[in-house]
Length: 320
Ligand SMILES: Cc1ncc(C[n+]2csc(CCOP(=O)(O)OP(=O)(O)O)c2C)c(N)n1
Ligand SMILES: [Mg+2]
View: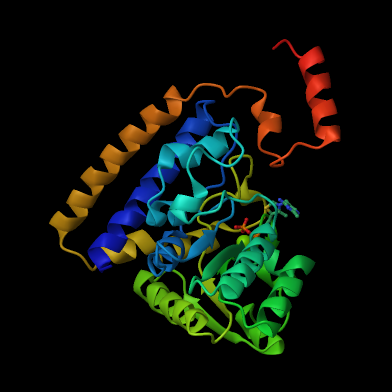
C-alpha cells in the first residue's frame, strides 16, 4: 500500500471520526471515543496485515483500524450506537474482533487467538491494540509473559497517546517506555513514530513477519497523541495545557501525509471521504432498534439455566 492509499484511508478515518462526534452531539450516538491524531498508528499497522490469515483485536478508539481492515463502517458504528453488542459486521470474515471497552481486554483475547493459530499452524498473526494506560494492567503483563514463553505469533501494538483519560504516561510507566519492558519478557520491543504512517507500516510488517516465521511476539510502542478528548464526555482542558495540544497539532499525522502528496491527490481523497461520510451517516441514522431478545441470544452457544431464567423474568417484566 503506498502513501496515496494510506492517506486516503487516514482521511476517511478522520472525517468519519468528526461525523461520529457530530452524531453524538445530535443525540444519535450515546457516546464516542475520538481517534483524531492516531490515524497513522491505526491505519499503518492494520495495513501491514494479511487480511486472509491475520486477525486484529481493537479497542474503543480504533476506528482507523476498522477503516483499514475494510469493515462496513455502518456495522462498526452500530456498536457505538449501543443497540448491538459486537457491531453489525462479521468479525470472522473481516478479521476484526468486536471492539473491546475493557482496558487491556484485547490483549488476552489476541494471545489466546495466537495460541490457537500456533497449534493449528495457520501462519496467522494476531495484533492487539491497547493504550499506554492499559499497559499497566495485570492482564497485559500475564499475556505478554505467556506469549513470550510460548513464542506466539502476536504483535502487542501499544498506542502511547500520552494520556489514560487524565493520567499522563509517566504515572503509568516507569523505566522509560512500554517498548523497553519487552526485554524483560524475552521478546523484541520497538518504539516508532506513531504519526509517521510509513514508519508504522514498516515496523508492523517486520513484527508480523517475525511472528509468522516462528520468531515470537513483538511489542511496538507507537508514540502518538490523542488530539481530542478521551470521550465525548471528557474535557481535556481540565488536565492538560493548550501549549501541549498546540505542539502536537503541528505533528498531525493526516496533514503530514498530505504534505507529501500532490494537491489534486489530496483533493480527490477529500471528495472520496465526503462521499463515505454521507453514506455512513445515512446508514447509521437508518438503523432501527434491535429485538430485545438479542440480549440473551448471543451470550452462549447453548444458553444456561440461569440465563433462561433471566430471559423469562425479562419477558414477564418488559413490555415486549
Ligand atoms: C478494566 C477497565 N478499567 C477501567 C476502565 C475505564 N477506562 C476507560 S478508558 C480508560 C483509560 C485507558 O487509557 P489508555 O489505555 O491509555 O487508552 P486511551 O483511552 O488513551 O486510548 C479507563 C481507565 C475500563 N474501561 N476498563
Ligand atoms: Mg492512552
